[in-house]
Each structure stands twice: as C-alpha cells, then as structure tokens.
Image (cartoon, rainbow over all chains, first blue to last red):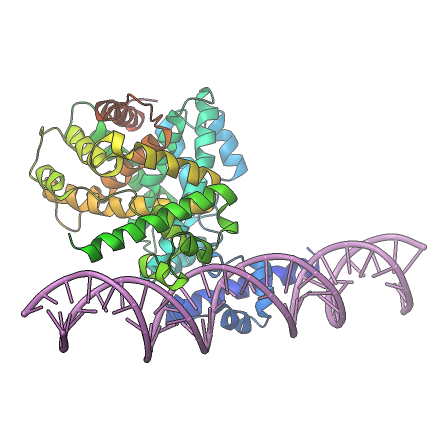
Length: 202
Length: 202
DNA sequence: CTCAATAGTTGCATGCCGTGCAAGATTTCT
DNA sequence: AGAAATCTTGCACGGCATGCAACTATTGAG
C-alpha cells in the first residue's frame, strides 16, 4: 500500500475518532464540523471529502455488509444446510463481527454509548441495517431459488434483521463472550419468534 | 373547535400538500422551504413553527400510533385471546388504517410514490416505524405481564413491525381491498415467518 | 533525479437549513 | 371593548454542504 493511501486512511480514522470523542464529550449539537476537522488537523472542506455529513463520520463502517465468501457459501446452501443455522452464520459474520468479536468489541461499545446519548443517530443506524437487509434479501432469494416477484425473501430478511438488531442492542458484550455465545443468543431469539407466530401458540 | 384551531390545521395541511406536490414534481433537492411556504401563503419562518424539517412535512402523520382504545383492549388480552390475531388487530388499527382503509388509501399511495422517488426519506420512514415499535413493545409487555427487564417483548415487537413494514410496502392497495384483506395478508406473513424460524423447518 | 501526470487539500463563495428573539397581528375570554 | 393569550412574521445569525479553482503532495516514467 502506497504512502498516499495510508495517509488517507489515517485521516479518515482521525476524523472518525475526533467526531466520536467530541460528541461523547459535549453532545452532537455542540460539536461543529469545523472543530472535528481542526482536531484531525485538516480543513473543514477536507472533512466533506471524506464524509457527506457529520453523522456519516459517526456511523460509517457499521454494520458491515456480509463478507463475499460467507455470502457465497450461504447462497449455495451451506454451511450446514439448516436454514436458520446458516442464516445465523451470515448474520454473525456481517453485522456482529466480520473478524472476531473481540476486535470490534470496543467499537461496538462506543457506538452503543453514542446512540444512547444521541437519539438523532437512530434513523441513520436503522437505515444502515436496512441496507444490509436488502443484501440479505437477495442472498435468501438466491439460496431458495424463488422467482424475483416473490416477496417472501424480503419478509424473511426483514424479520431476521429485526432479530439481529434486537440482539445487538441487548448484547452485553462481556469480556469473555465469543462468537459462539452470540450464535446461541440468536438461536434462542429465532426460536422464540418462531414460537410466538406459529399457528398454535400464544 | 375554534377559528384559531381550524386555521392552524388548514395551514398545516396546506404546507404538507405543497411539500408533497412540489417534491413529486421536481424532486426534494430542488424544492426549498421558501417555496413550500410561499405555496401555502405563509412565511418561511412559519413553516418551521409547524415542522422542524422539510422531511417532517412529508412524513408526518405516518404511521400513526395505536389508538388508545385498541391498545387498552389488547393489553387486557382481547379481543380474541389469540396472540397473533390480536396483534394483527393492533397493527391494522394503527399503522395500516386508523379509520378505515379507503380513507387513507390516497395518502398511502402518495407516500409510496414519494419514498420511491426520494430514497433519502427512507431513514425517516424507518424511524417512524421504530417509534410505533417501541409503543407496541410496551403494550406487549403489559399484556404478557413480563418483568421490565425481560427483553422478549421488544423482540416480538421488532419482528412484528418488520412484518408490518413489509406488508405495507408490498400492499397493492386496490380499489376494493378492505381491512379484512389486509388482515389475511398479515396472517399469512406471520405464519410464514413462524414456519421459517420454527425448530424443524427449512 | 527530474519532470510531468495524477490525486488530494485548501480557501472562497454561495445557498439553504434551522433557531432565537422581539415586534406586530389575530383570536379568545371576560 | 379591552386585556390576555396565541400565532405570525422579519431579522439576524451560525452551521451545513457543495462547486470551483488554485495549490500541494505523491506517483511513475524516462
């Protein structure tokens, strides 16, 4: 990777970190783009070369779209062949942790505090989940081989992302918690939803 | 209702209609608050006495929170005692149509065209569904008598709103369609979700 | 190494958004 | 009719976001 690219990534991260830090300190309303840019030692104008809005600097990179490899396996019916289990694999790989839970734990905690402190960020957060939902919808349609007019993959994707969103929100993010634990929580959640809407239950 | 109140409602509706019409004509980017206000014969400043943002003028009143009476019946275990059926009653009463489907059909069609033309409105739309979701969550918790720490009502509310959102999006809104038809669509959707996430299915 | 090409940064000008404030107009209540 | 409450409006202001052109830094070829 060349010098230019490294500098760009450094600037980007500096802007993100400055935005998060200042927002947690003073609240989003009392942080201007000018201040964020100054904190990262770039001009105001440069900030907008990286992010279209202040909120984008806070929410970018989250949640991630599913990894291409994971997606391919899912579309081809893997890895286990059981729909819910494979769905959970995709969800943990994309939204929860693309490269191990530990690596993203700090970032997830920061974001959590962020949206708790600043409810204005909720719409943007929901929109990002919605984007993942649409990708997931396509993957489900491919896996199940339904016709493009069939809207059921969208329905399943929507509810699956609702489960995921809820799980992320309620996740305790303890030190020792691994991906396996998250899988278990998701499995319970899906089971509970299935039971709640199954024909014969209350 | 006094003269003052009537004038306020008239102004509000005039602003909404102007906003929707101009946005459908030219696109949201090419409509300023000044123009909307002029179209409704009020000052720019007055616009902001009614709506905090341009988007709010487009999306307000949708979706509606559940009617207080409907909510009370649901919390007390009614009207049928079957969870899914009663849930559907609440959902149709709040989001789909608070006072008959026909009355809101035109408004729903307009909104549909609006968000199709202007994807920037999606986050705001999602946020509004999210608000209803939180109210629904409380109602479910009250009905089932779960303790406040129990997060399952939130989970059920989230998935239920996902189903509702999907149903609204895919609704065909034909002329003859009534509330009963919407109920049937919702029932099918819930059944399908229940089957997809039930322990033994694919 | 040098120099041209490419890509990124910056300042400037601009327009719109959204809010606080105070003065003026209108409705309401007595 | 007149005081009180409420709504509208104009004004000023600061921040957001974009286009443009000049400037600076990296890259790559000879």
